Length: 201
Image (cartoon, rainbow, N blue to C red; front, top):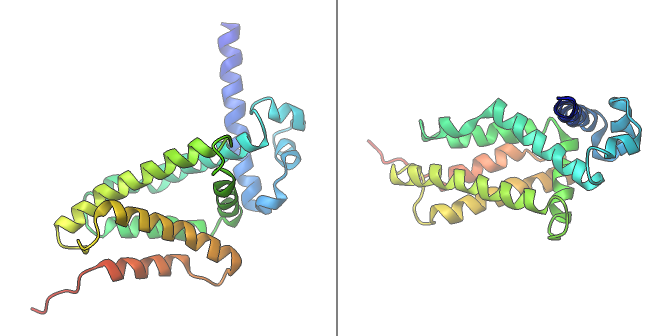
C-alpha cells in the first residue's frame, strides 16, 4: 500500500509540475521559463524537478501534451464537427485565436517541432502522433463536407488536411516574426477559398 500511495503522490506531483509550467510559460514566455523558474513554482530544486522527467526536453514535451489535453477538454471540437458543416472551420479558428493569447506556448511548440525532426529527440513521437491524429480528424470532417458540397472536391480530403495543418503551423511562425499578422483571419480566408460559390436562386 505504501508503494501504491507513493506512486499516486508521484503522479499528482508530476501533474502539478505540468500545470504550473503552463502558467509559468504563459506568464514569462518560452525563453523566460527556465527549469529553475518552473522548479521554484512547485517548491523543488532543479534536480528534484528533473527527478520526474528524463530531461529538460522531456519536460517540455510533456508540457505540450498537457496543453493538448487541456485544450481538447476545453474546445472539444470533434463531436461538433460531424454535426454541422461550419463547425470544423469555427472550431479550428477558435483554437488559433486562443493560441494568440499564449505566445510562450506557441513559441515552445514551434521550436520543439523543429528539434523533433531528429528521431532521437524526446518530442519526435509526440509530433508524429499529434500530426496523424489531427489529420485523421480533419480528413473525416473534410470528406463529409465535400460530400455535402460545402467544400471543393478538386483536392482530396487527405491532401486538404495536410494543407490546413501546414497553414496553421506556418502561420504561427509568421505571427512570431510579425505579431500584427492575424492568424485566424488568414486561415479563415483559406476556408473561403476552398468553399464553392453559392448558386444564385
